[in-house]
Each structure stands twice: as structure tokens, then as C-alpha cells.
Image (cartoon, rainbow, N blue to C red; front, side, top):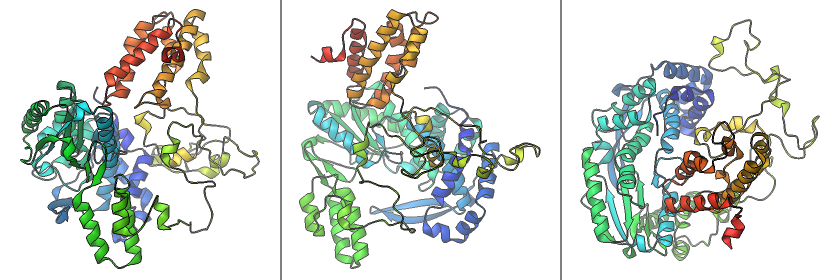
Length: 554
């Protein structure tokens, strides 16, 4: 992938700066602190100041801006750093939020920890799936851990990895500043270290194992790694490759590494993972039992039970949970904790459903309350509530507008202007769109079949019919493919390239130059990715001969 630029522009967008401000000051303790009260009182001024410093490339932190302390985490003594001023934390958070968004698409899918939407349970899901789908190829496990990762990281290798991804000179300079704020290694505790540590191992380890050795089943959670294979000999070879790569960047693998049968259970992510079931790690069970014995407060015990249930529900340990807590729970509702807004109003009508029940279902978001009568009628699509001079807002760029400009006193949407926009819901470049912006738009799903008219306007009759048939069959297969779904369907815009000015009805060229590459990128990191692409290719070309996907299935 090519290097990316214009990152600073994304960082200083008001929505990103405001969200970072809110995130850093989200805790009650921080809000009530002296710094917190000042920042909240001068919110817009602070956002403007930080935006200008970041945009100009003058934002800089030094060793004098951080404090250090020792903490005990999971039985280990850790030396951590944190900023003295919350203002610095806001700026670093804003920068890294955008950086992390761009880094995420560079990581393999089975890399987790400090990555949005990729926690330990997400990673465990992939391990269990691969063990069930490929039992022969996952008979043995190689487990390793990098010794004192953050403290031992070579800063030059981190910056080399940064240069491979970004070309924005201002951004690179600020990231270099974050990395070298301490003499050796990268800081434990600063927001910048998480993503940059992942980037280093992604460049030197993850992609090396995947691309050079073709390792199918590799999983990494921060500096802990697991590789599954069909034989011990295969895993010992991979072990040598891991050592070679880790030592290349001046790091070491701990001596407790092992190659063992998966039937013994993989102690990883707080669980012991077996081919057919999962148990909680012994230390977690013991710690919870001790806490329950020590704590007498009913409120505090309820919090402990909820926390333990959050772990236990991902394992096969219902009897254990009942024994330790004395409760039989099927969901968090069973704790009898209910949320009630301060104003007493019920915000959402209907039953609460699991997010899993909404996967691949069309969702329309409307910026109004259902059943409320307005001058525009009920169930309206466009809400004029934020239009006109009454909706004026001032941005950090207000000083750049001339005094005689209509927007001199604030930006607003004119009464006669309606904003329509389109987006792809799998486009990672907009995944962190500000929720305030989302609320102000009505959302209507447009499916590929809704835009078939585009083909008839540009293509001849025969090519148009073939394109419509190929697109329909290919999209049916994509929807059924594990790892994809309806959101990944191919739209008619791709098939417009079959016009006389470009590929002139050459479906092979369209597949080779556009569609195959796109599907490989979608399936990158998934098991059997190449085989899945081949299956989709067969359906694509079979459709040219009049075969439908239903015929093919039969």
C-alpha cells in the first residue's frame, strides 16, 4: 500500500478535536479537577489553540511535560508515564485517533489489543472459528511472548515503520517527538505508544509471517503471539522465523515459549482455549473469589459480579459462575440494574435487541422523533431544525472569514439548501464520523440493484444484460461468503468500465484489474482467502454463460 498524506487536515477537523476533548475529560474526577474545570470553561478556545498548533506543526512535548509512577498490573510492576497537563493529552489523543484509523487498515485481521472494535473476545472468536473449521491444520500450538516489549523497543525501528506508512512531514515530526520523549523504548501509558507499538510488530512480524511464510493461523494480542499448525515440525520452523524477526529489531522472545498439542489448552487472552470448549484462566477465578469474600458492600459486589459475568459469558463455565456468585444469569438485565434519564423521558420505544441481531440488516436513521407532528408532516426525511441563521455555529477557522461575509458571525445552512451525501458503510476512511453529524442526516440504504439503470445508459444491450446478471450472481455469493456479507456487494459503477471508451465489454479485464483485487483486499487475513476468491471468480465467469447462482448451487 502507498504512503498516506494530508493526515493533519483530518486531525484538526473540529469534530475530531471536539471528540478528543470529550474523551480525555470523560471521567468525573478529571472534570472536577482544577485543570478540568478550566478546560471545560474555555472549551472552544482550547480546541482552537490546539488545532492551530497541530496544523502548523508546532505542537511539541518534552520530558518535562510528563510524570512517572510505578503501578502493579496483573502481578507485574510497571513503570508508566502520563502527561501533567490534560491539554497535551487532548492533542495527542486527537492525533492518534486519526493515525490509528489509518493504521487499522494496515494490520492483519487477527491482530488485536488497543485497536478499535478488536478486543480479546474478538480475537478469541477467530481462534475458536479456525480450530473448528480446520481441526487438522490446528492440532498444535506455538505460544510466545516478547520480553519487556515497551521498555526494550528500538525507537529508530518504530520511526522506520512510521515512514513506511505516512508521508506527512508535520505528522511524522510529531510522532517522532512522542516516540523519543523518553530516552529508551516507548512509553507505557501515553496514548501514542499503543498504535505505534502495534505498527512496529505489524511491519516486522505479522506481515512477514503471513506473506513470507504463508502462516494461516497466526494471532497477536499486543506482544503475545499464538501460531496454530498441523505439526510440531512446522511450528518449530515458524518459531525460528519469529526469533529471527524479533531479534532483527533488537527484541527478545521470553524463555517460556512452548510448542504443544492444542488438546492441552491454550492459555491466552485470560482464557484456556480447547478445541471444543473454553475455560476461564485459573488466576482470574481465584482473584474473583477472593474479592467476593473481602467485599461486603452490596453495590460493590454487584459491580464485581457484572465484571466477572462479562468474562464468564465468553467461556463454558455456567456452573462455576453460579457457584461463585450464587446467581443464575442469562444477561446483565438479571442484575436488576435499570437506567433512567434525569428528565424521566423514555428515549427509545420498543425492545432492546443484541447488536448481533442487526448484522447485515438495513438500518435507516432519522433525525426526528417518530409520531411527532410538524409542519412537514409525520415521518419526514429532511429536518429543517438546523437550518437558517438560528443554527449558526462558530468554527476554529472563523478568524479567516472576512467581516463583510454572510458567514462572518457564524456558519449556517441556508434555508434554501439541502445537503445530500453518499457513503459506503465499509469505507474505513469515515468510520469515526462524528455522531453529531450522523444525527443531522437521514440515512437511506441504496442497494446495487437499485442503480441498474446506470448500466443501460452507458452500455450496449448485450453487455448491459451480462453485467446485470454477473453483478446479481456475484453479489449473492458475496453475501453468503464468511467474512463478507451484503455490505461488501459490488455496485454497478464497477461495470460501467465495460463501456467502449475503456474495456469495451471485456469482462476478463474488469475482473483482473478491479474486482479480483478488491475481493482479495476484503478477504485479507481470513482463512482460505485465496480459495474463497477462486469460488467467486468461478461464479463471475460462469454467469457470463447464462448460469445463475441458484443453478450453480444445484
